[in-house]
Image (cartoon, rainbow, N blue to C red; front, side):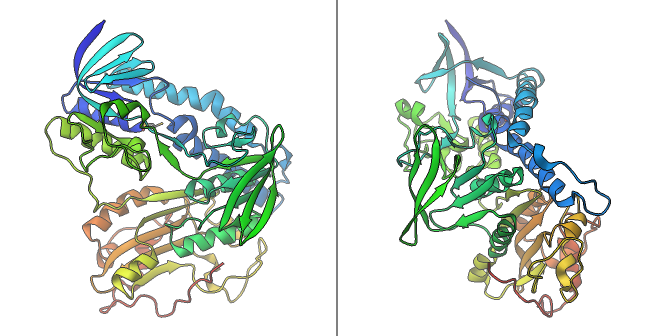
Length: 500
Ligand code: COM
């Protein structure tokens, strides 16, 4: 049976395909989504929505440990803390609820047609799903990505998992090795540790290489305090075990070390799922990605690729926006990816999170020379701060108060675990070039800070804004303190934070 002619077949209904198809419909087109699992892709199964939930659970676990028995807080029984229990709730409620929402929003609310089942691309105008042939004037490949699995002995052992298996955990691991110290690996380490799981991160090169030095330092310091071990330059050679993983073997500084564990979280990167599009003759890049131009066009006319399948950066915003760009181009409204709008990023560090947009301090110094830092805290920190203690002489220990919830509690009970705020300004143009934060609730603001960076927002403009104090980030008030300087120099004294 041959169905109607669609303006485009969106091959995959994840973030990129779903948003692209919706935008296409809004522009007056007739899209068809082909989807074999669930609309919304991995987001609500094991990625963004799931991780957000787990980060909340981890925050609760961490905060309960911090508060238990302090001040008026009751002494809590912390033995019941369990990652397996947390994910069980998500499996039971979160996954089906989100799947329903996605289906409802896409099919009912937006009226987008979906062909459910495993699609087979016949040619660039033809897709078969469960024996039905669908015809489209264009095709958009939106088949996502999968975790990259390194080719090492033991990688298939039970107990070796990726972010995809995280919601399937039925029993709490005792010792976990996280392979990979990028934002996913560091986030996973921070999420697992509060559940009384001993975590070690093994990174082949450098952890969080794209992040500002002060954020990296904060993570190292925080992990040390929480007993999470990090090894950089750790080349994993083998995962050992008979019926189940029992250790990870890595070479570090020329020495072979063994890390006993009962779980391994592999987070060394993503591989685009481009295989199903090979028959179309699209060019495939060295990361297995479908190569596209700024308008999401492949080398084959009428074939577009959007989302993770089109390669890095693997961001939700990129996936959804690429969908929108492809839709626009298909209806003749020329659109391109705009490099001038910097991508904000974030890492879960329960009970906080790190957020960034724009340049790091090192990048800014390379480009602009002597930049001005609008930053707290700075200067020395008490070495081994105890909860509910005041340390005279460390004037900055109270700043920044770090966010939306538990603002001051984290300062009082959290052993100086009170976040970081850092803006970087080019003193000549007085424009901001980067923003960094560790706190809670700043994510929202960073979405708009990205636009302000693109617009060339200055410290003088920032000083005119109205803050809602106490705010999750302090950019307005901290900038206002020095914005009046005719020659912008920043704060009179600023002692850099020590490296960890
Ligand atoms: C979110 C998935 S759960 S999508 O980007 O809205 O499709």
